[in-house]
Length: 508
Image (tube, rainbow, N blue to C red):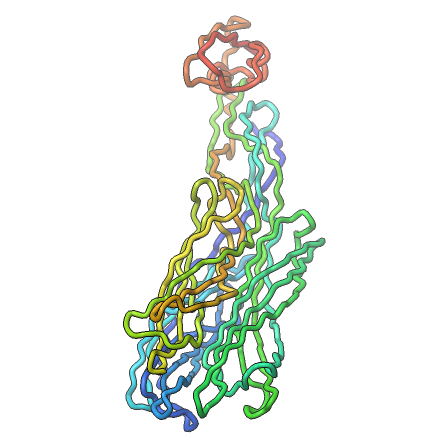
């Protein structure tokens, strides 16, 4: 039997590609003439940078470069120097086809690096990093609508419907005056992180306000080896064209630093140096509309034999953007010797998980802290420590997942608590979208057998004793009667029974 039905859908993001590839970085590095000889290597780092990502013809292509940065102690003056070299890479991933509406998420993770000195001026470096690639598209799940003639058990639910999915790459450039800082002669280490501070939506457009945090450790006197630091916050604004967003959309954004370039724009001996910063960013948006839905959990025909078919429907019943900062005190201890002076401390990487705890969402993970310092004899030293953190978020009760989750360290300060221990005060900021997910068994279709009519019976009412564990829906289904009539006949206003009792079951 065919019944006319109203078709309704819920949209959600679905991964059509979720993979990882290993990229090798092999470098034979010979110091340029202006660099002094190497006495001791302090730190060798892989810094992957993504220049472009494009999807066409079922092929996702990611192009970028990997910079090998070597911090070392030079043999003449025992000061810190740096040398680096970049190698390009290109990686392709195959998809079955190109989705109509999609976003591409990428991230990199250094895995290992081995550095071997063949001479005081030549290094052979072998390393690898992981390139993660995910393609999200919009997947629609149909919500079954019962036609007339069927009895249906309805579960009201609030569901998040994905109405917008968009992405945009853009570049932020700035010339930073360092006139009030010691002169910049050589950049030893730099890092750039990005975060979103404000999002406003109008019809099909998003106005996004964020900030870039540049941290730079540099050599300010080549003769003496004196170093200095620069912390710079650069606000940025961007308007995204994003079909489907409006004032009522709940927007979850991810801001990814694909690559950046820090360079001295003017002559190195200038009294007013200018630092040129170019950062390539990628903004990704998921926009949701919360709406009330009636989910059909069971259905049957009162006139004919019928067989419902079921499926599992995953829905997001709660959604809240997260932007939360907290302070962690993290100790960095030197195993042997003393710390004479701390030159710089930075967060090399942050790993974390978001898990439910006491009914709410909590993040916990590790910050990999790197410290450049001078020991008691004024000889440069490098210390690396992994420090744990945890924080309970102020999210709605029952949230169990953090979409587009990110933890960064926009602020770091330190003090020496004793001769061998530095106490780091880290400002950590969590962003993303807290979600509450539910899985419900729902009806996907009902097959009605017109050639198998159900007998009506010989009486208008049946006396039935309902025992423990029974409810009015299961009783009405077993006796082929309408739930509404059963409730009215017995003067009941809810499906569940408080206790075993006698019921009058009306026949149609």
